[in-house]
Image (cartoon, rainbow, N blue to C red; front, top):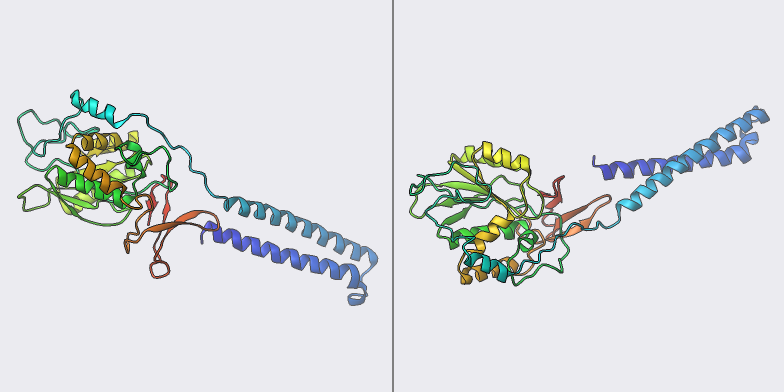
Length: 336
């Protein structure tokens, strides 16, 4: 039984107890002599006093639960939004100064931020694919539109605004832009890996990856889940792409398992290293329509934020035909 239902049950029990005790007190106070003529006045007074104390205790518990119920229904306030002042012009100037390089499809991702694989000597190529692929992104529990996020320029804030399916589509289109073949693998906001990546002309899958949208910090459990998927699909490489940051424990876990991790700033650098036309195409894909509300993993309709007895959750707009709902876990990531 959920915490909300337990509180409702206790609330109803105490309300019933108050009513019964109050009724017993009234009967004892005014009708006890006619109902129980054998009772002495002292016994009657003791019974009245006991019932009154019990009723006052019930009233106190009832008021405590009422206050807790009212507080739980207050709308949550979304805090912690970060604003960035770096403009696209400054970003492009940095690109022209050689700080970022155009990604090479045939090269390894040894230069990727948080690259945990061994460095491959210059001039040599790894026998298998070394580029990340997106998996199911899990959007952070942020629904209100940020007034500081520009919809005409790329930024980390914009990447973190994208819901899980839109972030996955963006990553898939990015790989297409750099000449790779990204194909769907699974579809759920909490699956271990959602895309498979193929090199041109390859006859077998080369890698899998997990994409995680939102600003939540990515924890080691996502690394372990991706590693299990890597073993199931028998691929040599696995990549995890997140719009947020990786915790220090997640970085250490990725290093131990030989994974490549890409955070939001690194993905932004890769996008801005593309030609201007491809940057614009990806931007139009990212901000088209409602890109903040999560997509239902069952029927692909949009979901709406609902308020339950004691917490908020996302429910499919196709309800009651589709009863899918998602709630944020302890890390702020959505679980179906």
